Amino acid sequence: MQILAKRLKELRESRRLYQRELAEILDMSFRGYQNYEVGQSDPKLETLIAIADYYNVSIDYLVGRTDVPDFHRTEG
Image (cartoon, rainbow, N blue to C red; front, side, top):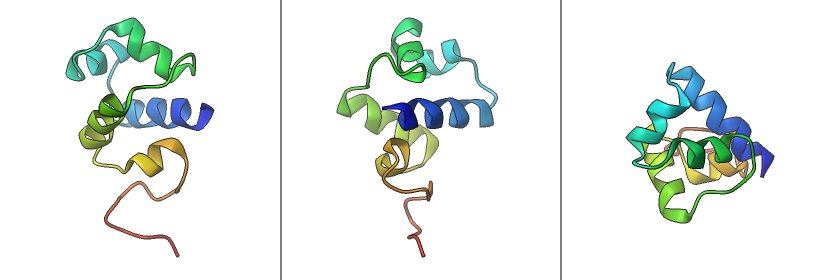
């Protein structure tokens, strides 16, 4: 899921975090998180929820179902 990988990287960089820092925040391995950003694996639902909560975005935004990151707003 390339859109997920792209958005994870964009969100992380917007917060000026390193992959290793975010992996620690999410309580996971650096390599595991890195695999999400390069599209080699997809996070489990609980991890996806934790990422969405950390960035205060919707899961729909992370996976490309909407381009509106703020889950309190709607498109159009």
